[in-house]
Image (cartoon, rainbow, N blue to C red; front, side):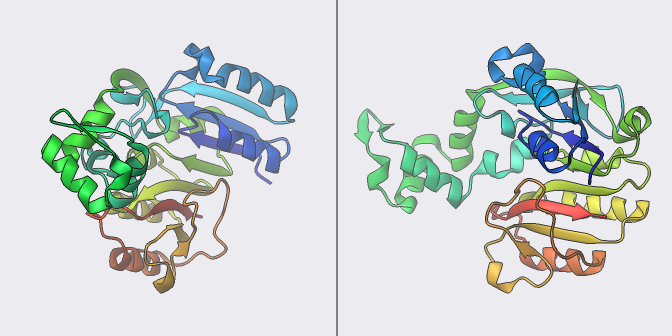
Length: 287
């Protein structure tokens, strides 16, 4: 049973609530760069109150960006329509699936765009094939990246936020049983802020950030972690040996049944992931 959990990138605290449900009496320290306490309409202030009343555990909220260095000011890009993909990572802003698109995202857009305008003519995107829709996007916007930027930038705001690192958090609250990190491409920065082995860690990964995932494993191995596992959505699900297929990608608290050596997992990641494809993603676990 977990007694202390760090929920980094807590957003609206859905993961936090699952922790309280499954681990009676658990204390969850929630950290997010978005100060949800200033936005009552988000429901978070009321939710914290409900969680602390309904469950035997305790929920604490810290408004900060988890990074490698404590007490700095960093830029954070807030997506007003999809707060879950807000980020402090310039690489995520420029090179991720949300910046460059992929066939899965564009297919979702094709299904949702009822009318698109092309030189004053109305076009029903649902009547197009995916290839036709991509051709239409390139003809209208110049590139898929420009199309994705226009959609995202219309809802994007840059704010400044203070940082906190894991070393500081451990000093303040103690060594947690689990650290969960889901901060949209900024996971490496957070993990580099850990200077000694804790207990289990799980963090989100995406194949376009494969080098960051391996760098995280390298740092954690240096701290003394010896067991590694990666689960998630893989297009190559029939060919996996050490990686674990999970349709949902990041199901809360779904710990993998098997862990393996650093070498076995990293070798298969390099063989399986194609960064420019930007499709595979999930959660990595270490202990």
